[in-house]
Each structure stands twice: as structure tokens, then as C-alpha cells.
Amino acid sequence: MAGNLAKLAAVILLVAAVASSPAEGNGDSDALTEFRRGVVDPDGALASWDPNLVDPCTWFHLVCDEDKRVTELVIGGNNIDGSIPPEFGNLENLAGLDLYNNNISGPIPPSFGKLKSLVTLRLDHNRLTGPIPNELVGLSNLSLLGVSNNDLCGTIPSSGPFEHFPPSSFANNPRLRNPGMGVYNDDSGC
Image: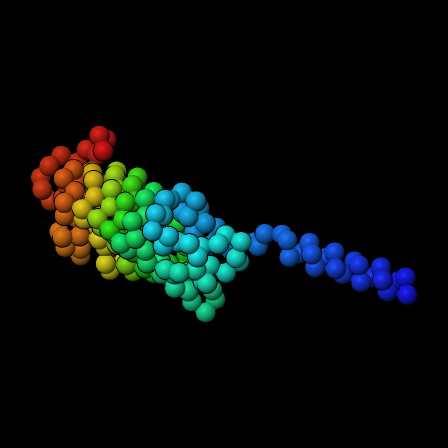
């Protein structure tokens, strides 16, 4: 009897230890949690983003594939204030990123160049600054880009998918230059 009681106590302690330890997230949940930590969300759009849940696919504003990898992040028009963490470059299955019409500031992370599945990138109507990273020219699947109405600067890349984006994709960025404008190509002051 004492032996069975000791085994039962050991099982109960093991279950309690597992239940009280934080969930380990995959790279997707880590990147999203980093974003959540760095933003102000006055309207509660990200209230369901619980870093203790292993599966971010239960969070609002996300779409996942059958392997529980994030394929779309849609947080447009939610009054989010903050910056985009470089860890977003680790969302390797991400096909759509919609952060338009918020108060996102800071640069577009060069790590976005690792998002080889990215088809749609909408960052328009924010407060982004700095140049458009040249790393984005390697995104061969990128077919929709919106970075208008920010404060981006420098020269718009002219190769890769950028050969096909209309001028409206870049509108209302007074310090952003088109490479065909005949203006000197010096982005050092950007």
C-alpha cells in the first residue's frame, strides 16, 4: 500500500510540475510574442495573444496552415502603436502581413528578406521610417506591396518584385525617391 501511495504521489507531482511550467512556443509564437510585448494595444485587438499557449493559431488576427504555422497576420486598422520586431523574419510560412492603418513606427526590418513565402505586405498608413530594405528584392512571390503614407526615405529598390509595383504602392513618402527620377542615389542621410 505504501509503495502504491508513493507512486501516486510521484505521478501527481509530475503532473503538477508539467501543468505549472510555461508552454514552449515554436518560432512563430516567439516572434508574435515579441511583437505583442513591444506594442501598445489600446483597443485590445491582441488580447487573445497569450504567450503561455503553445499554439498561436488560437489567437485572433492569425491564419495558420495544417502544420500550425502562421501564414497570415491581419491587424489592419486596430490602433496598434509600436514597432515591427526583426523576429518577424522567422515567420517562414508567412504569406500575408497586413499591418496597415495603425501607428507602427521604426524601420521595416531587413529580416523580412527571409520571408520567401510572402505574397502580400501591407504596411501603408503608419509611421514607418528609414529605407525600404534591399533584402526585399529577393522575395520572388511578393505580388502586393503597400508602403504608402509613411515617412520612408531613400531610393525605392528597382529589381525583383519591385519592377512591377505601381507608384501608388509608395505614395506620400516625401523622402522616398524613384530610381528613375534622375536624382542622385545617396541614401546615407536616410
